[in-house]
Amino acid sequence: MEAHAHATPPADGPTLASLPVEPLLTAEFDVDPGAVYERLRGTYGPVAPVSLAGVPVWLVLGYTEVTEVLRNESLWRRDVRYWRARAEGRLPRDWPLLAGYEVRQTMFMDDEEHLASRRTHHSALTPFQDPRSPEGWEVRAAVARYADELVGMLAAESGSVGFADLGAQYTRPLLLMVTTKLFGCPVELGDELVMDLWRMLDGGADSGPATARALAAFTRLAAHRRARPGDDLTSYLLLADPGLSDEQLGRELFMNAVYLNDITGNMVLNTLLEVLRGNTTVRRSLSAGQLGETVNRAALVNPPVANMCFRFAARDVRLGKVWVRAGDAVSPSAAAAHQELLALSSSHLVGATVSTRAHLGWGAGPHQCPSAARELGGMIVSTAVGRFLDHFTRAELTLPPDQLPWRSGPVVRGLRLLPVRYELGPGAVARRTAPMRPQHRAPGSGGEADGRAGGLLAALRKFMFGGR
Image 1 (cartoon, helix red, strand yellow):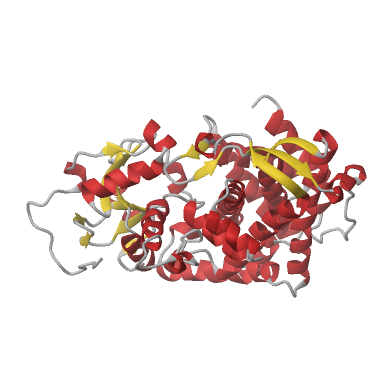
Image 2: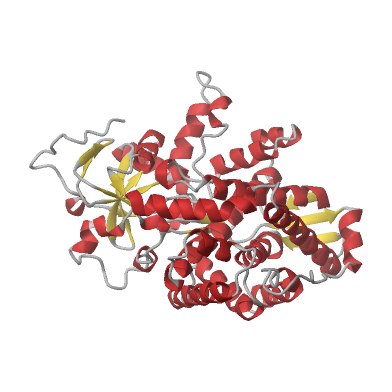
């Protein structure tokens, strides 16, 4: 792919607004998005015009084109103010995706503003991803401990042999517990944060108000930690940039919570799915003891973010077979790009080596997850998957893989549930009698959340199983 940055589009060439576009989010897409990507690729090539809730955008399908868009920040902007349809007032006032793009945080910044915010995040996150630091050691121990406690609770409630949903009873509560711990949420914020994050991530009918409530909760958390700093990410973000207002910090915490719960959680579930359904290359990596490679291969099959957030063309540019005009929105599709890459890797001319670290699960280019965030996220995924493999001596899907229900939206494609028939090892069963005990720490140390795992889990269980 070649981006002709200084070429001129033909005067009579079609524009995105003038093209007939088909809706992307259809029943067919819910069932088999890969087939939709393949049909669009066959009709339009690596870039296709589609409609998202009535708004036309370019969907980028080719791996080469996707990586070009992700890596060329000067040409493909993240700041929503570059979006021409928004600037001209052509977006419906109630367009359901607009609220998220209006939350001004690191994801939607460019140039020096973006670099400065990334430096702040890298500085604040580094202690937690470094296994040699006290913070890094503690968060690793907490992830493993929470995973063990969840398995122990499953054993206590359902026995050593039974049925479970690895989404609702393991992965999602685990990530919410880690979030509460990492952010330093006090007791009075915890339950509210859990409930609204869940509604927000599920994208239900009240997801808009829930998003507003979550932003308000994170803003209050920022104010709380400003007055009472501790050994938590919220306090370290303030330490790295004392000039952040409570509202600015609240927006950054909001972004981190979405990424930590949705992206990292989906990566855990997708890895478990590929192991359980018998993906040959994933199991081969697992048999070789290469847990990190197991996660990478699973991310190629099912990336945690199917279609990435919009980029906006800074000027007219040819991408694939089409001309993208200045201000057009493009959505780089990691799922479609991976589909193309996997087809290439299965060719006898290439071989499977192409699929080792080529996945876009953490993004690519200037806006990819900061290295400290990738290390931390990778540790959480590997620990969650590893503890599952330690405790479950047998697990098999209770639904055929093609009948599993998915959350299919404009960005995320994640499992709604992962039902299994399981058998636990003796170590997990022994935990049935091991209560979750609070960790007593000095006031203000940021450890309040760690001591309330039992209460947080009780709130989660009530919400997950209480009439949803």
